[in-house]
Length: 537
Image (spheres, one colour):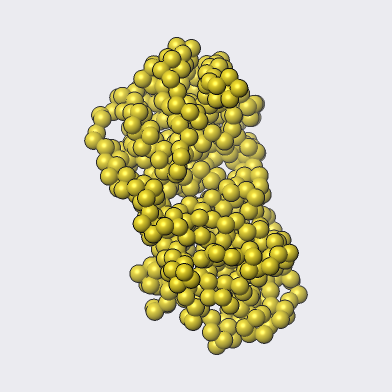
């Protein structure tokens, strides 16, 4: 039978519930338990697909084509699990399902209410995690205890716990123990009040995980145990990490959070195997090859979470090459205002990530040209590949106004065009080419060398694609088509032969990178950047 862990947050937002949940999943997996993960988000959007990255951070995409919260990236990276559409439910998705059923007469004329109909739908979403190959399901509740929009989710997990039994489910509450600099001490009162909110609606945390910037003293833990009605051994400190988020699981393991969980769920304490994780972390902390700096040229640079998986995948590639990867965020529009030599001085690689809309595109195209002309390792992803094709068409093939029809519907050289399957679609949410699709690689290319395979599967999120009407002309000028759909109709990867490392892809490889297994394209890119750095010395 699948057992359940519910993780809530209190005091303030952005405490890192996703990383805590992912760390716990990793620790349980290290003991041989099969884990599934899920996030319930209390906002009214059906999914984050149409939300601005400044509002929500990056949109993470699963193999089955769900547009989800970025925390699912943490789940997959830390725990090595595969998430799905069942892994992320929002208030909008829950209400849409209930309203659709009501319109079809599914409630037999009854009055539809938050309780029981909305809470029952939430419980059904939680129960969807039940499977013969899942021992423990971890559900993270988005938002903060006390938020009005979170109440239906909290009531649903209260009911689920009551119906499922205390040995089959448990509550973990992540809270903040702030350090008041003027007083020179940590304060437990906010955590007590946060737990009080939960207790007021019938939820008593079994485990309290306390975020803090300096170590807690024993009296802090005793006070929290007493006033939050939590056993002292179940009060866990989560100290701010100094170097890497990948330190968090080991810190939690040191305090025995996984053994607490197994005891509460009445599950055997199997031996833990963290050898590979410790080895990886040692490389993070002590890389043999020093530092290499990569410029990330984007339009949402002000918010690091907008490119969360990009930065993580670059870090993973650094681990694979035993080098620390430093990031230089470059606002694409700055390339229209400042000298390129100034913006890119000292960098060893240029990455242009995905995005939508025409803002920043001219700057991204200029970054591509700079990388191509100066022999700097270049990696283009999604829109980054489209910009690479546009730049090549303009500056190498002489197609002066070459463009994407997304930005110029009337261009005489639409080298990037709306996919045929997208031309009849008007709705925005969940209608792009989404999820994992196969790609056939051309032998002898950098792509094939990186993957060491002839066919791969990668995740997509786009509407526009390389226009194959221009394929012959671009290839004659030196552009290599290194990856296509199995039927050859869609161009998925391009590269330049006479360049140290110039590779671009239509898909999002960052979504399949983990600290224990860096994505081969990112690993190849960072390796090329490392070689470029050494040549430049």
